[in-house]
Length: 360
Image (cartoon, rainbow, N blue to C red; front, top):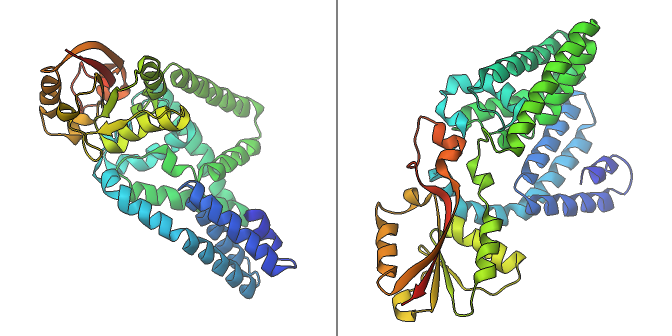
């Protein structure tokens, strides 16, 4: 899309404009972060306006952008209507959510450099990388008169400012739009350091911090977003390998459990396994009486259902069925979320559990 946008300054306005609209609309419909790319292009448009480019040409680009957005708007509206309430009502297990708002702004520099892989209270890594990246970034201020540097600062700090004000936690994925500009400023600042000892010393510290970060990531230590390490593929493969014709699968929540099971079993796995849940796609197993029941639960069920609801359901199942196997995945206390002072879930629970019941 940006390729066609660049061509718009030349000939064939209709053809290139049509190409931009088609590819930008496809980008918007592929992933919601496509909207961030369009916003980045709009900011680039403002920069061109600041440099005194031809206003009619800029107005034409703006209208083409608006057309792309309008074509994708019905799908974004439907997506927001279906998912906004669930997302807005939910709470995240991110480590940054325990910090007050006035500390989240300086922590953003640490987030951009190490992401979710190091806990904010790992002070040796946090302080060293935070100070180094912060100083390298701020060194560029003395070159603010250079329009390229001021432009990169603008692209970097506007998303950071919005994130600090609007977001409850400081989540790295919401700042991905400014990461390229942030790294460009860091790289430019390193090049400007004249002393080789200081330059290579800073690079060495950064490399060591990144290696510590990568070690945490691949060994699942201090990993902030516990949702991303739940072994849904492994659990689904276990269920799939032991599934018998006539079994029914019941997931707890529709928004999480049902959709993930349906994805791994019926979309990726190309099976036709009947999957139900306790919210939307319900089934009265007492009337149906299948030979076996698979019950799949998630750690977030304690916030989705009334206290004791799932225990009562399991007791109701055991009146006509016997529990023949249970597979528990990822103990809650093994995740970083369990170390937070907010205590979202009880210790001793598991992020994911799969139970198999057989009719007596």
